[in-house]
Image 1 (cartoon, rainbow, N blue to C red):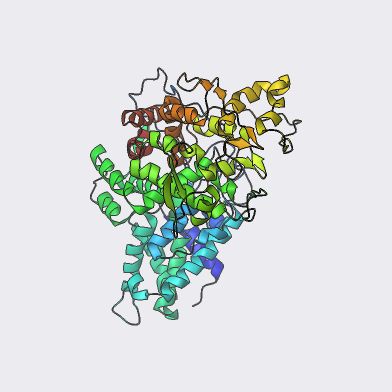
Image 2: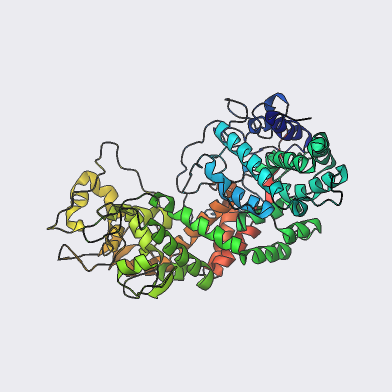
Length: 591
């Protein structure tokens, strides 16, 4: 019997969605639509029954209405205020899709496939600087098609490789027993928990029905179904409670193991983590901490930290950004890969070698490729990326070439972009958007003036000064870096004035006149506001959402642990993993 392609999707996603434990989005944010139902993942499977998500606001089955507006940057100081943090009060725990990075890492770890199938998926939406926000990323018809095509290609490639390694069977013709063994073993890895008997039966039924086409074909079709199942595509933090729930509910061992893995490695739990969950060894602070520290030392954790940093810094906007100058022979976008490689090397060194916030913002290191070495006039490595110290030129993250090139215009520096970036992303201080009738184009390049002289109107015009006094005073500090991130002492033969002022941040450690970027970097490196801001940014990334009132105590605790550690990034990651919001979920309400 040959099953039609659409019917396979219906079996995997409609029927399985009904018979599987009834997980649902019990905290779906208003206006975002519920998470997609099983129907949305199978095209026709809506006819088959239950949805996996909370109630949407209409639209086609499982398509999840709307993505919501972009969230503002919340303040980070004193979130908990006088709140008593004695009761566990976790924030929202919505049903969430695997991010594109998590999908690619997971299929690589499960099947050894490193082709990056998610590159064919629709782009993820960004909220508060991150592309993993659960409310903004719901299933839609194009994503459904992407999942189906990816599952088919992955399954075909997997059985075309080492079938005995994937689904070992002593019987050369295959057998139902071998199929069941594959379903049980692979299913546990794919669903991040053991399958229940109902799930095993459904997949076994599919395997048995297709076994006459051959063992490899039956495995392939079963694998397709697994890879399109809600239990694989979604991260499910809870099953329908057997009894009414109240208050905060501790995550089960497999759910907590999945949270740890997807936060710290952006991938599915490894064998050690699944074994710890099976043994009940994720129940205490010490056990959770031990697993967190183990995962932090894996290569996947380094990739996760890089993904966080690149999203936080908005580096995807550098792709295709044209930078030009009469004395640079490189093509307008030719240096983008070099800039990204340089920044990635710097971040890995800052986060994992030294590993403290102060070093992140003050390190004199510059990592160069051969092309960048020529551009910046430093010794060139024979290949790859190598560090050089530039103590009177580079002052940590904010003076790295990739960031300076990103925060620039095509033919000139951009003090407004640089000042606004530092204020919003690094200090967590909101910057109001310009009025709609303002001309946001930079002044034309003038070979007889400096950038600062050309931008004088910002502070001279009373209509502009109110906002620009908050921004430009920071941005001037970066004026010794041009649109390529090159250090310079003169602009058009004129001395560059990098003095400025930080105002109205609410942090006396930051506010006050600035002598230049070295002064700014030193203040940022020791600022409690910046430290709390960075902790909050990583918390948002870990939770896949912007914090709300219920997160106040957890965020405050994470910030305190980060501060008490002297700004250690490893301790920050451990603190998030140990937070109540990470280890608990709200009680489910009756439907």
